[in-house]
Length: 428
Image (cartoon, rainbow, N blue to C red):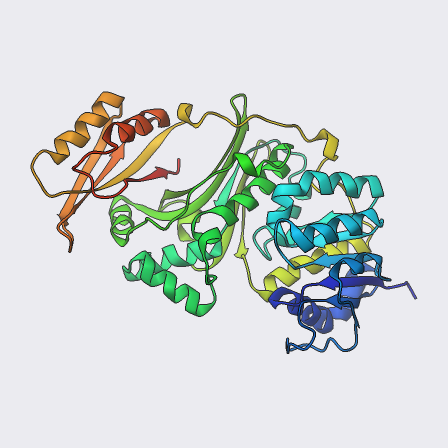
């Protein structure tokens, strides 16, 4: 009988326990597809006594997570998390020991992916991370393998389930951000400290990995311009709906002569676009290839089952002997690319102001737009809010982003404005 692929598992949280359950439930089927059994032989976590709903007594317990790299396992699976610390130490030790490494850790890869890819290639082992982006959705494999013959022109999508849950809930029920965030935390869709999610950092980690795979560039998380959804109001979502759009937090990446463009930002998405219909804690990624056309990858972006499914899919590849470079081409072939100047990008924008209810405010805003060269397509003013302020929303004609930025700069410090304006791009 073929020798089993022996696994050491670091991290026994929701996903780690899910991996154990999946291998227990589908073990025979997985062995047939992999050509050999896949067996966990060692585990490590912070608390040995915690009840995780799975039997871990049958596995070797290792107190020092790093020691898993030198256990009897063929592959180490890291589900600890964190850009540095124990996760990175384990990754370096595992690859240094000549063993394959599977991870769901997008933060670590966004910061150290190039280093780890080189180490894997030098050791002749696999570095796999399907679970790091979009949970159970096979977008990494889709870009790395399925679309490998294509020049990818753009990759973009909904990369954070927490934000999509909040926005689609606000949309369906007309509730404001803070209230829906509290509900998301109570339901387990959002962390106690949700900053990484709602400020766009989590999506930026994922976008940097997708951009590397799509364009053959080195992961460049530091160049991702990221902003989140904490300033989106129910009124913005209602205004977008009246205009024929839905609000979604999108990560967008393009590569061209002007450099590498990477941005996470709330967008108005036309109701005719597939992403407008992605609701709840779902992820969806669109890749546009020069021969294959538009590809849409959609599904559950988190949770024990979907994420465990992606982890085990990587293990099946390794069991089959399917290694290949982590980022679709050898690490030394990945090119460094300067960040593009977003000021030259052309598009339409939605800009919302919260203003004092007094004469001359609209004229002041219109003058700032005019002087910056922004052409206004439509302007909407809604009735006074509880604090007496008024919402003014503008949709621009297509033009350079630099002009909108200059208009907002002209209005900085204006006594007419109450709080910061909200600028959302319109997906085109």
